[in-house]
Length: 388
Ligand SMILES: [Mg+2]
Image (cartoon, rainbow, N blue to C red; front, side, top):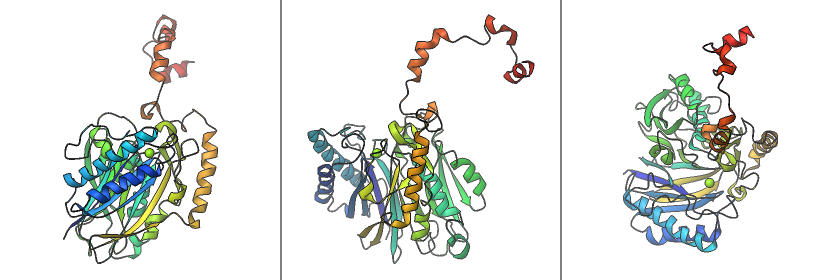
């Protein structure tokens, strides 16, 4: 029988700024799911990273199930009431609509769901990031499923040797494309290297996969982006579910993709680049400059409706080197203050005063083609530089 794994997350208030969730709010969300989830979900786990509360669920109702989305929505609503009572910052900020209309997509929370054919043992890892954007998953998901220097299983495991299929979204045009690795690897990279426009939504096995043909094996939350396609409105701290082992990346291959703290967008006010630091969840507070951006990972096994675990995967000194490097990169890049490339390009910033500054200065800008600049009129910049 098919089973669905659903991971739904939201920021419904934090303490003191965007630093961390409050225990009472997390408990309220947990109790709501526990009390109202009977007959809807078979098991669940509540966790958090930074200011985001995360609900991981197993059930048989398929993706986009009204009952499951409604359960998460109501749990976040009831948690918001507690956050409001405590006066937490940004209480209910990710619940963009007043009432639930059957599907949580486009309502604020992020959703990663996949319907799967469970294997004898069905291990998977839930990755959760704070202070960044869905495109931050492009690099590690590519490393896991397409880079043999990260995942030697692609070379030495018969079941992985044919590679994987990537579903990539163009969030500006609101369209998607399926591309196969390894044969279309350079096309894939040319898209997903541009992570603020092209985001990996899913990874699937190939139809010829010997153990698990044409199955969804990884999924990333991209929902806020999908409904705003065509207009850039900012970041949404993402999460992902990645299935592992038996013809898929090994647990350690999936984790290895985070051993290098690459740069992501979305630090401080959603407007800065910074290193992604892998952390055990007890270290998931966002204290330094509201970050740095962090990723946590919980390892589960699914069996007969139950989720066993989780294991806090980054709570391991083997990632100390990555954390130290991330801290050093943070020290380095912070010294750039409000300059690019620490600061994001104008069109990607969540906060900007630029329109106001431009309004104030509009009478003081001189048109280069005006009489003052007329000797250069009609000439291309290169030609002007040539003459000069
Ligand atoms: Mg957040």
